[in-house]
Length: 381
Image (tube, rainbow, N blue to C red; front, side):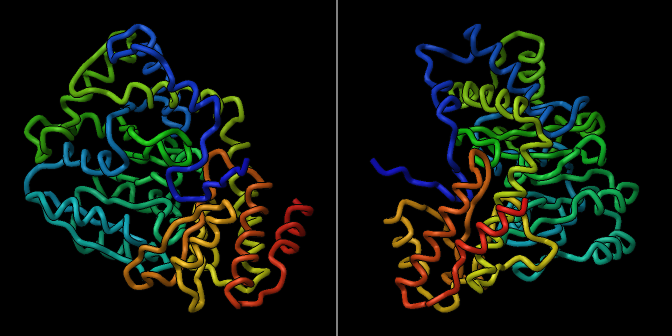
C-alpha cells in the first residue's frame, strides 16, 4: 500500500481521529450530540484565534463565505482599503465590486508585501471605514506582518479585518491582544478538517456594527447567524440554514488535538516544517517566490525555472506527493505551491524535498542535494 502525502494548500492531510469523529449515524443540527459538539467547536475556535471575549461563528461554506459576510458590517458608500499580496487578497475586490461600496486596492508584486508606510500614507489621505489584510497569501506564500500593521493603523480606521484562511492555528495570531475586529478562516486549511465550514470571530465592537440594514445578501447576513451561534454557546440548538454537521464533529476533535498540542508547540512545528522545506529548496538552488523575511510557515511557492508545471506536478504525484498549481496570473504555469500545514511533520517535509529533488533530476534539471540540506537543517534544530 502506498501512502500519499497531500502537501497541498487545502484541503490538507487530516488526522484519522479527526476524520473518524465526523462519522456519526443519524445526527442532525438539533441532535443533542451535535449541540454539544457545536458548543465545543465554537469555544475551540476562540482558543485558536486567541479571542476569549469575541463572538465565534461556524457557518456552512469556506473562507470566501466568511469574507463575503463582512458586508454585514457595511452600509452603502462605505470605503474599504484592501491590502493584497496576491490572488486571495484580490478576492476582496471581487467581492466588494458586487456591492454599493467604495474600495481601493493596494496590491503588491507577487512574492512581496505592501510596505506598511504605503498603507499609513493612504489612511492619512482618505478616511476608510474598513481595512482588509491577508495574513498568509495562499497564492504566493507571503506572510504579512499583521501584528505590526494593526498596531500602526488601529486608531486610523473603524474596522480591521484579517483573512487568516491559510494561517489560523499555524502562525502567531493573537486576535484579541492585537486589536483585530474580524478574523476568518476555513475548516480545510491549517485547522486540518474536511472542507465545509467558514470560521470567524468578531470583536464586541464588530458585533455592535452588525446591521440589519447592511448591504449584505441573504445567506451571508450575520444579523441572522449571530443568534444561532449564541444559542449553541448556551447549549441550545439553532437554525438559519443547515449547518455542516459532520464537519463540526471533526472540528470539535481537531480543536481538542490542537489544545493538547498547545498553540505554542503547533506554531513551533509549522516553523520547523517550513524551515526544512525552505532549506531543501535553497539547497537545490530553487527560487522561492516570497521575498526574504516574508515567507510563511504554511505555504511555499517554488519557481520552476522553465520546467513545465503540469508535468512536474504529475511526476511528483506518481511518487505519492500531491502539491498545488501556481495561480498568480503574472506567473501562471511557472511555479508550484507546496502546502505544509495542519497534520504535517518533519518526516513529511523531508520526504517532499526528496520527491522534488528526484523529479527535478528526472526532468533534466540536475540540482545539488536538497535532501542533505534539509536533513542538515533538521539536525540543528
